[in-house]
Amino acid sequence: MFESFFSLDGAAYAPGALPVSVKELLGLVVSVMKDCEECVYHHLERCDEERVARDQVLEALQIALVGGGSVTIPLLRRAVSHMEKLPNLGDGRA
Image (cartoon, rainbow, N blue to C red; front, side, top):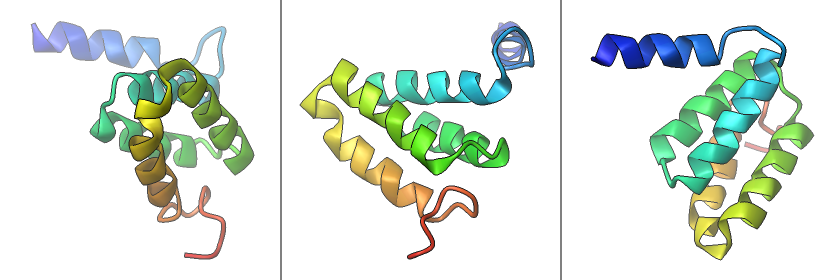
């Protein structure tokens, strides 16, 4: 059963009509709205690996805030803090 899920996950994030970077941003937004902190960190790290621009990630997080409401703010704060630890998404002040 787990193998089926993990193969679905891998297929969903594989290159296709949408670039992998866009898929990771979508995964990030869904993860915030589902309140999955571990998932948020995973997608931030994947965005970093895919060289997604910092401003694109921040805009995606804004969409998560609009969709998820104020209850997402604590997780969004932790997400931005986590971004500072990543080589490509940090703003250089960490």
